[in-house]
Image (tube, rainbow, N blue to C red; front, side, top):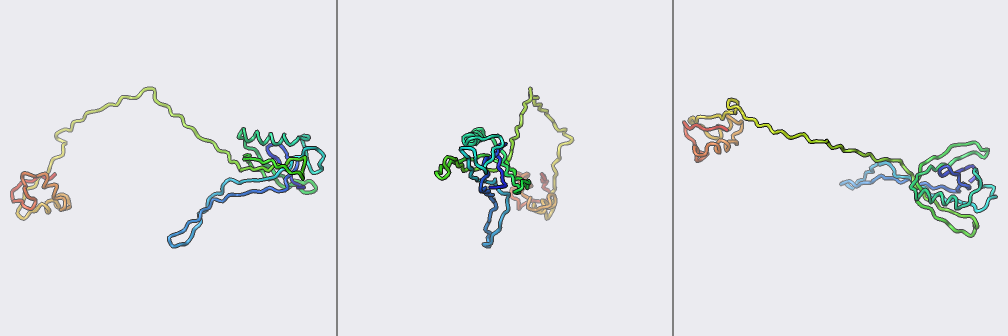
Length: 223
């Protein structure tokens, strides 16, 4: 893959991969309406999955391989991958692109986690090692913690007794029944609603035996 370089962490892979596949997971959701029409709810995409096949030479000497820090055997790189998985450490995936003349074009730089890798034994590539690597985009996050501090002592609860002054106590109203009065009319006069007549009847039981029979001169309590 001439003109390309691949770094994981701060380590350059000896042979740039021939293919890099990125899978961007859409989270959009299609809903069916009551009239059988459809709408699409647009949501942010999920984390990107990345798959790449690596060639790890067993011996130095390939003209297409690069070893900036000196030759390292395949087990060095596989140990590095295993360590990132066990230590749950995210790393930077950097793909560099350059012209045949060596002029840098641009880089792709993404933080990833190493999900898994498969070692592929292929007699056609003996004694070199092929590794199929699965990476996933990693987004840094942090949890927030809150510390609850309990007071050293609780303040006592104080109950204050309050006695109403007799002069400020609400006074019940009274009404002297006039000729032609009904409980419905009296309730409408005092409450604005004749349907509230039952309040007057309940407050005057003993004076009134039947809410439909009241007599002039009766003094009724209006609660």
